[in-house]
Image (cartoon, rainbow, N blue to C red; front, side):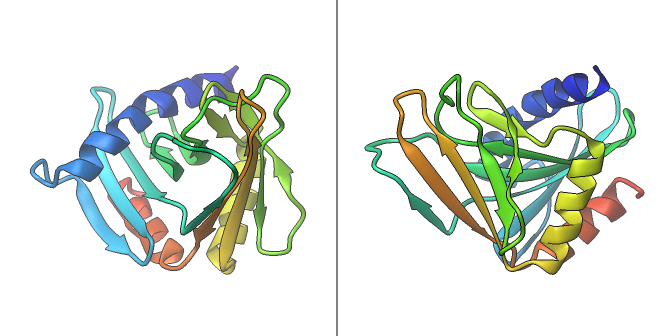
Length: 172
């Protein structure tokens, strides 16, 4: 139940990704490191620190798609850290089993909800972040509600520096 609540909270915070990434006027950007940008904001309960990247490559036969982000989120007030989530830019097919793979490691199945997907638990989140720190690329696969198979490739260049920035901002 704690993981589901954390996912809902992250979903709400990710709505802010588009608005924050479009405007520096609020001073929420901690920095851009390689392909990753780190952010901090207050949501009324406490600090939310997160980092996001867009794919460097997307493969699939689609004509249009909303914004795509791979995100790592810390929420200090809830003591949730390293929450890995994917905003796919499309609604997942109900039977879809999206997955994430770091370099040549074994793919990990994600839990899809509408147009987002999460790791199944805190332990999986922590393992993914550890692999991302050491890795070069993350590959996220998913199937849209129309049956289109899509693979997004995210560079992990700058991941460690972006991660250090959100750790420092959220006092971790």
